[in-house]
Length: 180
Image (tube, rainbow, N blue to C red; front, side, top):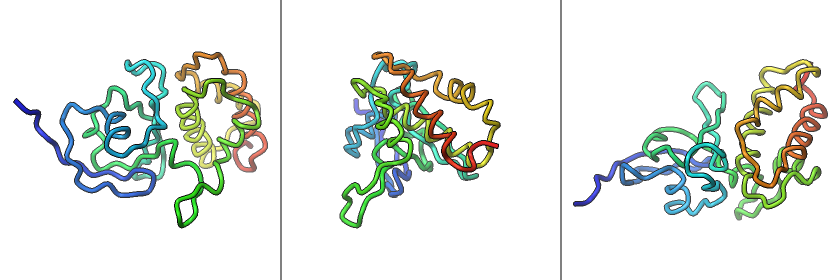
């Protein structure tokens, strides 16, 4: 007995994926890895706890949110626009990476990773936070608490938390318009 194939459309990193047929039980991380060869999002715990598999969902209202992909069926993303870690950098016409994002640069400058396995989830969470602060700046006195709350659900097995948190805090404080 074969599993029913479900059609769905989505936008990944600015590119339309039109009418892909996938098994109803296929998790989104498997779709990203096996169908699109986007392997940057990591399958960590497989239970939705570590958040290494996090992608960004760009909502129609212009806001963005985080979503895990290890437990969520691919078809739950039908009609949505998502960004994976591969979509953060700037690329030239040939597809070659020409620049990394400010979040990625902050992580590099602060040595914010050891093994790097959890880094894609942290980059996506920090990006959602930065984008939120662009629309709704916070007082400087709230930066540390806001960073802690935003990254709190992400697990780093190598205990790189201090560097991740420091990098994002510094980025927020040095970027005009994120604080009041």
